[in-house]
Length: 172
Image (cartoon, rainbow, N blue to C red; front, side):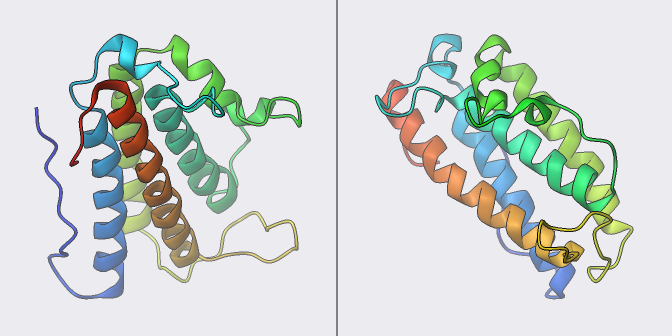
């Protein structure tokens, strides 16, 4: 299977451009993981980064989006592994991800992305998040989309490096 993706929007309005780039970043993460072995998906090839596995990175992306869309934007109850983050264990979503098969992580990430597309489509980009940042300000949906594009794109670089070190595949 080859993930279809494009960074060229169907229209040039702000919403379409933002959501196209967000979907492109998500699809790039998924495409980078295609065809990797089960062993490769949980391998941490960087000596200084024992949590940086393909499974760990996909889990991180999933739960970061959950945090920004469901908890911050919609104001829903905190849930998932990030609730258990501590100073000693700041990334439980990456640590525990090696216990979950990569195909399941990818399927959950893609299902969540589909739900979030619907949430975003039904709201103005100017809609403020229900929960404030630590400094008390409420970001808007536009800022959240931009932040997610940045976050996923940055981690796509990590996924690319890990994938190359795991099995030599490049060029996603």
